[in-house]
Length: 418
Image (tube, rainbow, N blue to C red; front, side, top):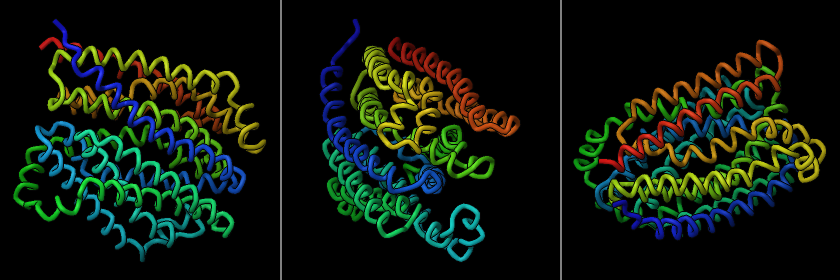
């Protein structure tokens, strides 16, 4: 007989996390209405490039030990694994400061402010890794209200600083500085609420080393896997300024930021709670398939409600909401709307691969995801068309998301049958 014990509590937790995230995203939406009129597509393009680079470095900086937090057997082990991730991320941020003398060489082609670009990259990496580690820890011990409060502070700070710096004529660096400040404040607030410093004082190096060795498969398999996944999602940001223009990237990135909002509010909340609910600390094997099916149905319904308006009238909506200069952002998002739907539905559920111990399979699929992005970029470069690149990306990634969903469902079914 199949158990449904965790399902009721699961949806209460989704509501808690989603409520705070929705408030944060409401601030983000309101601020974007202002920022889109204060900053040009070219400046949004410079910000998008910084966001892509810092995101990749932050992802690597934890060694992906934050993924191991969800497999912790108890609260103490979850805390120790989170602190291991956190310490590695801070070391990575400090190491980046050593590259400041080379800032003109490393970032000179990407921005008019290479020193400031590189200087902000260090705290962006360290705080990004801290956010991943602390969020994993808070999720595993079900501190969803604390995550929501930290996200609210992050959104408010990023919006306020970016708007103020626009009036100070900081250009793209205003958007970048606002993003970094918001991320630092998120990590600081969540760390304070979790009692981070008390745990750090009690942390024993020997215990940390033991956890690092016991979970070595995460950096071995998950780092390459996540890098491939990230490149699949962000390769356009890395190559568009060189192949086409920063303004084209700015248009594309605004569309992606708008698409990311419902994913953050609904998909991310459901995914975080689903990941916690199906972990060994909170459920039995027979609970996994009912939770998977329940989450899949609700994600499909919510995803359809989110993406249908973009598919039908994306360019018109963007021109009306953000101004006529952002018409192309809506057009690019209209082309990508099937992928937005697929990502919304599949990404929260793909954690099943990790829970099933299929890190190697996940790495292979992520490599294919990155290759699909590379093929789309190649198509766009060959035809000399940014639109051709976006259309190719949509087709290739839809096929991959379909494969991900099929594999995830089969694994959930196998895990429940054990």
